[in-house]
Length: 406
Image (cartoon, rainbow, N blue to C red; front, side, top):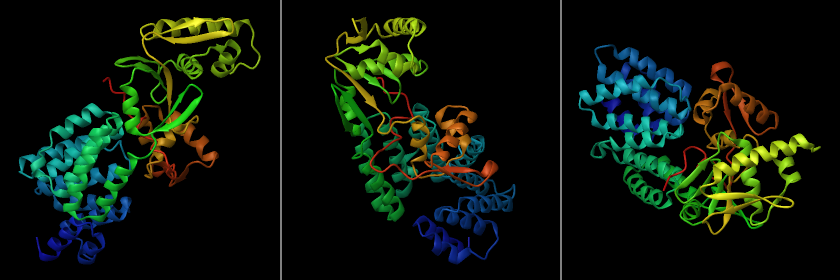
């Protein structure tokens, strides 16, 4: 490569996209197009960046397999930044094989890192950990090492392992210091701040208070019976009763958990769970049926007994019952939690991340937009949604993965 291309590449590696553009902005050869695309991506113009990288891939031609593979990696990173989770990952897998075949260990490691980041966004943490474990750490530059440790920290946070997340962020901080890229340093600092930000609320014995990630981890190790409204499960130690697909039963369990050690009147359960304004015998019959189902499911960890007024929850071995709730609760809290990361999301990407249908997500977005809580730009397939971050709360950490089993 000529001196201008080398200088532009060094500028991009140092996080100086404007310096890179000053050197290659007027050139249309393949290497210059690729570098211009990377620069535009660093500046946040992702649509322009995607077009430039695709032009570069075509300009390199079929004989430049290594260069085209690197362009695919760049386009994959742009897709991830724009939350295009439906981007064809088979292209990245093929590019990864090409990079490894040509001995480009650094870009091959970066490709695996991108695969892992996408899996984290989709909540597939086991697969993401496997991808990260396959990365050759000796091939990483300081900047990529910092990004790698950020991904490790992100998985640890979602698994509610505050100590492991703290250690990974310390390693990321050291790598970012060596990389000397201000944007990367700021990203590490922002990740550190999450550890000091409430991620959930504890409700129990007429008390409600916010919890940090390390406090949630301590709670999971305690002897309490936890009604987890972040994942809709009932948990005692390593025993978990999943109720995510039984919303009525979980609503009953939560009402009983919030009232513990007292009971809950039947009329209150009917109003809170079924929304019954005028109670008749059919409602009472349905309540008896649902309580019976809940009693059978919770048998390993708790009993549900009838009282004169209603029903009460009694743990079998736990010393207390608490409810773990999301920091901010409303009907479409999960959608808002993903949008609160400050990035723009498509409806299809949100559907993938939430494991819901696009129709369901679109209805939720329409309602949120009507309430002024989200805003959209673009139209058709280019339509994107975003919202300002919820100040003071780390809303996504307890939404995107199954609870740890131990």
